[in-house]
Image 1 (cartoon, rainbow, N blue to C red):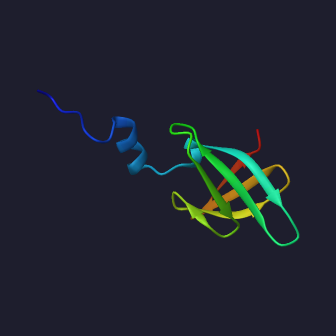
Image 2: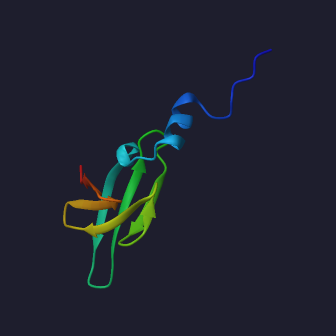
Length: 83
C-alpha cells in the first residue's frame, strides 16, 4: 500500500521558495490609528491579517496604501493590488 506524503509536491515547492504569489489582497483597512491588510491564501482560502512592519513568508509589509500593499525582502519589492 502506497502512502502519500503529508505535503504535496506543491506544498514542498512552496516551502522551498517563499513567495507572495500564493496570496491575494482581499481587504485594506486604513484609520488614523492603524493600517492593516487581509490576505487570502489562493490554495487554502485561509486568511491572514497583517499590519505595517509585520512579515509573511520572509517578506516585510513596508507600506499600505489606499489600493495596494508594498512588501520588501532584501533588495526586492513586491506590490499586491486590491482586487
